[in-house]
Image (cartoon, rainbow, N blue to C red; front, top):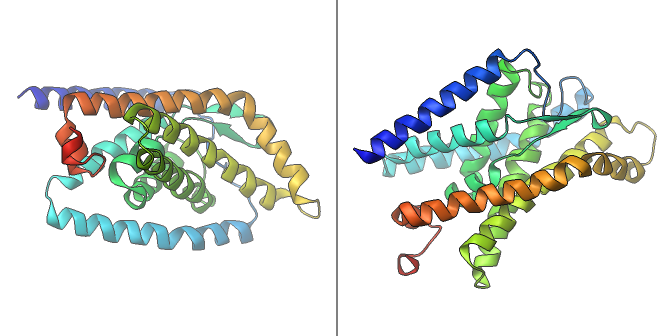
Amino acid sequence: MKMKKIKNRIQSFFFVLSAFLLLSDHAYSMHISEGILPFGWSALWFAIAAPFVALGLYRLKKQSAMDLSYKPLVGLMAAVVFIISCMPIPVPTAGTCSHPCGTGISGILLGPVISIVISAAALLIQALFLAHGGLSTWGADIISMGVMGSLIGYLTFRGLRAIKANLWLAAFMAGIFADWATYITTSMELALGIKGDSPFFPLFWKIVAAFIPTQLPLGILEGAMTAGMIILLNKKRPDLLVKMHVLRPGEI
């Protein structure tokens, strides 16, 4: 009964916050905005992203068939990623926005492959209904936030845990590196797409520098949020962390 009340409150919070975002007078494009990338680059990123999303959907179907409680868990995590990544801070000089991503926590809890599907869904809804990001740049945004953010967050967490780092530190660094990896990848995609005949690296570093004032502190904030969520779960529901293979049974 207590868990049901907590779940209802979380769902209510997400509903209210989503409604606020949908009704906001100022909808800033986040991720890479519509029309920023040339058609060729947009198509290439779509082609690269497609196999990752397909693998994630296959894995989701397989896991859901084995465990009926898995889909609701994925749905709740999708809501978390959606809300976290709906906090844009415009960066006009880069043609995009800074924002937390949430893929660190989803990568840790559900693995990078399922986290990619979650990111793809969140990005699609934001592009369709919030004018955040674009449909033509959906593939590029999946690569930066979904693939790179999820993978780097997951590998950072697993790597640090393998060398006996405590749970808080491993989750904190995973959140930071997942966030920063997203923006380094976004900078690369932007530089490749808009450089024309100019050299790649000067433009790439210029875009990275444009993100630093906002993304440096946002990455640290996301690290703290990721660590806080993992520690809270460890205190309240360590069995869930075992079920999701974040902890081994002996570590509870």
